[in-house]
Image (cartoon, rainbow, N blue to C red; front, side, top):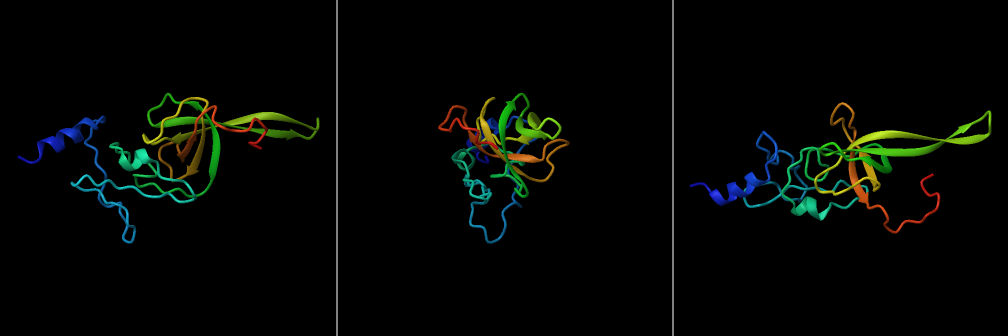
Length: 165
């Protein structure tokens, strides 16, 4: 009794020690998105700023409370772009942002870079070398303050010019 088939399907998506479910208190009054429930409804939202909610976030079965599309995280502040440097962590990537620094004494520029940790939702698939656009959010951990909003695969239609500066 109690819908064994539905419980078995939900158990397959559980990978953590604790039982994960979408919290019911996320949905805000006035937003006409689906609230989580037993009927297979899944909560998702539009983060705004011209970024589309991925189809895998709407139709997916993952549960991620730090996802900007299905979780309780709002994007505010800076929007940055960078290249994926490392994907070795679980749901976290390292982004390398390269820039030029002017040295007045020699009247020349030198290359510098900064590494930035960002949370990546299971809705996205990325590998090293891809370009990502991240948005600032509240602190998610000791070092993570950004969330991936868009992944541009390496080798897609981009001009070969010096466009990032």
